[in-house]
Length: 466
Image (cartoon, rainbow, N blue to C red; front, top):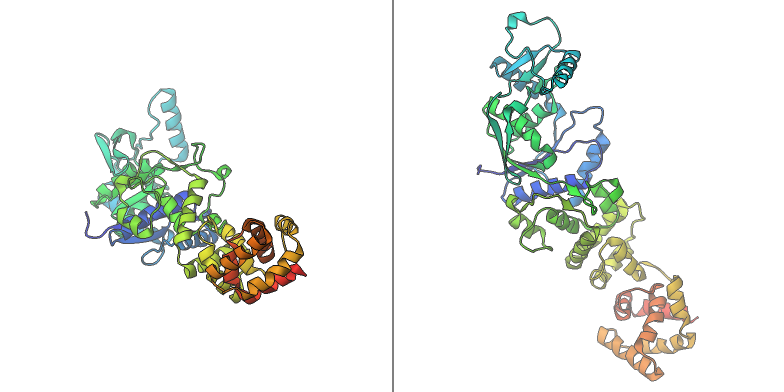
């Protein structure tokens, strides 16, 4: 293994950070961080027509939300075009590449003839071994001289050894006739110059590895460790697409999933460590290895994601959780909380976070502490409230006023009052939820009273009794 592991994530800025891309970034991040290595970020923006600054910003925001910090500056592939061309010219000078003057029409005619004769349509340029004195004064591309016999073996950490016959490889174009480098050349030069030791990417790039290895070998460069990971499928087993729901990482932030839960779920999507489902970042960094990645496509399951997110919310630090909820509200375009609401929310967090799987669920449970008097009741709460007479609430108020303001004290006072009235405490709890929160589903009545405090609790009881 090299002295230092260097991985990279290299998205094309043509849209948002796709959930599949987010998982690729995560795998690279975990592999590097778990080994004290470097995780680099390169934007593959050579396609000038489709690359946009907005898409680059969306990718960076998605990475930031997921907490996938990278080392050094973000690298632009487009800005390295001169260096990429320099490598093509070096290979040309060393006789490992050649000028090809064949036109698009000639290539199309070659393929048509080959098809008609039942031959391989892989283009074989007549200029590969041509004498330079016969070169016309015409536009040309630079092609690499592919090996013509034997085989190329991609030693892949996930797929195993993949053998490709060299007669299946064409003399790939390195530089177009306008002098611009092709993507395949740019990737190899960038990975080499960035010192990338491990290329962990989707298995849709597996065939590219054989063609990229031609450049590594022609330049005498070390070939990186390959790890081509299966794509993500929807619950129906088909490639994940818009019809399965949200595709962008930021859409999940705007839906209120915590980043830690998303990291845990994405790590588990196609990789496993024994039977462990729930784990922390520290455990993931320690455990993550390439041999734990499966060969089959993983299936995206929203229920599993929600379940893990709930477990992460439950163990989160209260202040950190409140800050993340603030970021969620912004991402979702919802009004932000006031300073008072923020501190009240943090105080209430102990009785909110145990059963919430998403931030909208948690905020719904927190309604009692975020709303202000007079508390408006929703339909279910209003029905529960109607089931008890105003008189009972008026009678209850002094008991609450005189209770010791602790959980035991409140439980004792309210249970004693229910006993005196000959009713079960549940009969009293439902209207109390309505009065204190305006909702039928809330944290326990005692927790709400403790968070609200004596004065606010009595004020809400008085409002309802009147």
